[in-house]
Amino acid sequence: EPEVTQTPSHQVTQMGQEVILRCVPISNHLYFYWYRQILGQKVEFLVSFYNNEISEKSEIFDDQFSVERPDGSNFTLKIRSTKLEDSAMYFCASGASATDTQYFGPGTRLTVL
Amino acid sequence: AQTVTQSQPEMSVQEAETVTLSCTYDTSESDYYLFWYKQPPSRQMILVIRQEAYKQQNATENRFSVNFQKAAKSFSLKISDSQLGDAAMYFCAYRRGGSGGSNYKLTFGKGTLLTVNP
Picture 1 (spheres, rainbow over the protein chains, first blue to last red):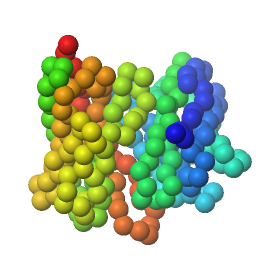
Picture 2: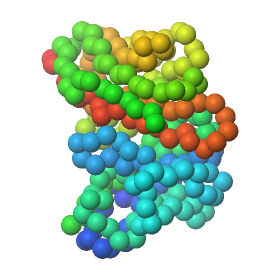
Picture 3: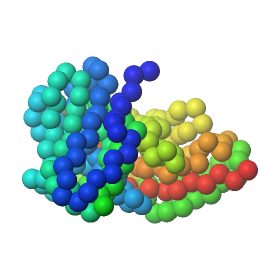
């Protein structure tokens, strides 16, 4: 069964450093999402992406964040200058259509020191 | 804005028994979808069940079923014959339906931690 994959599973970085989180969505999916879950809290929407552009973003998704689909398979989330409060689990999700169920990857745990 | 409320931070159940997890939501839309996701200790988000608001019939998936009360904006999850592997955090989530526009994000509740006792 096809699944969403994410790398790395755990990333440790120093405050102020740039990080890139990578996702490979399910191959025939066209809608892509990033969500964040700070430890012990609920899952929060960051951004949705379709047709090579952002379709919606939350208040959390400020200028420090960017997303890209550099090739036909990868979908990346970049944080330019990480802050301590960026420490969280980051989930990528994809769907075949805007209204399709969103299937989640296993997540990347980001720790900012 | 849509909100999802899970009023039970923690629940426990004996193995082989039945447990119900509660979820209420607030929306002004008539077309939407509701989901239950399971998050085991590995922290992966796994879809458990999905309900379309326009369907009157409650969704079922093997031991998992929902009680969808549209007028009351209630969407509870029933787990029958609970198994040790059901122990996880369970999140209720809402998403608008329809076509057009771009706002198809999932809005999650805070979750219910389910413990299954042997």
